[in-house]
Image (cartoon, rainbow, N blue to C red; front, side, top):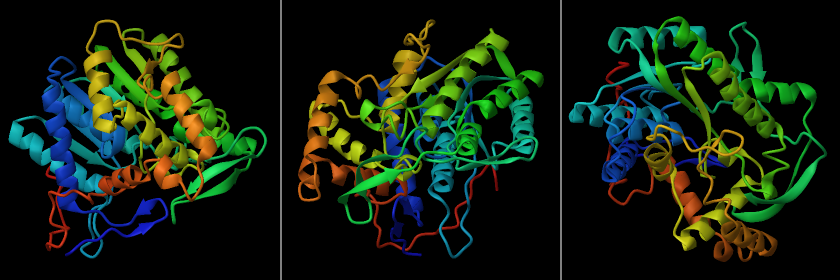
Length: 392
């Protein structure tokens, strides 16, 4: 099949297996060049197929030479439609890991469920005995909890309605977007889906099964952002969920003092989750322009490689006053944010291409789905039914 990108707003409904493979190879090459070496050796990554979770799996495997088990929920090809990009990413990662003699197995299913937790723990017990690191990087719109209750997340404010500039991704125009305040049940639903409850359940299940090392490290990923986006993010429903995530890290440390639990606050980047948030993509394209000019822009793999190398490979993890690892330090520097605010005040549909890095945003967007890699021949007929060795 010859595969072309089919984009609908912030989603691409096709993925290119060879492009995803090239993406994995480039990330592996970057990590190898960082010469990390120190670090965990048996890493469970929950949410392992795209974005920061995928970068964590690559960094652990090819930076620390660690075995990895990845948990995710992706769809294989049905013969007529392509698989999801996370499926192709994982197939390529396992192939490269196998070539390098690095352990890599994957579990596809609902990470929120008891069944997938049990299946994962059984695999850990069988192959490793215990994991020594757990990365929690789930991004999902809904969750069915262990009692069978369905919770749905919302992208809303928690105060009054908020109106601000936004980027219409359908035509790259600047528009005004109004985000309505959430109802109490919507705030609760977002906390249930995107907060730390499931993270705690994973750690409790691992402890109960004696499948996690006494001195293990667990890290969950979060985002805070600048004051500019506070109404929709930090002070919005998502922000409430992220505060719950931070409180969960403290609860894990209290309940299991032998386990080091941290939240890493990461940089703003294009992901399938972030592209759906109103107002935020405009901030992203302006930020990209500024940070690239300053020479400190990072993608997922650069960010996570720095996390492993500079923050997690030491006996004492570097944290802020709230106990958070701050990987957004370069993004939130005064020098960067002053330029972002100046551009934000000036940006219009007419000058957005000049003031922001909208091309870079879209380049990252397409690459998430395996497109726009010059090394790949997109006119070539390719096989879309790709197997993941440890699953098929």
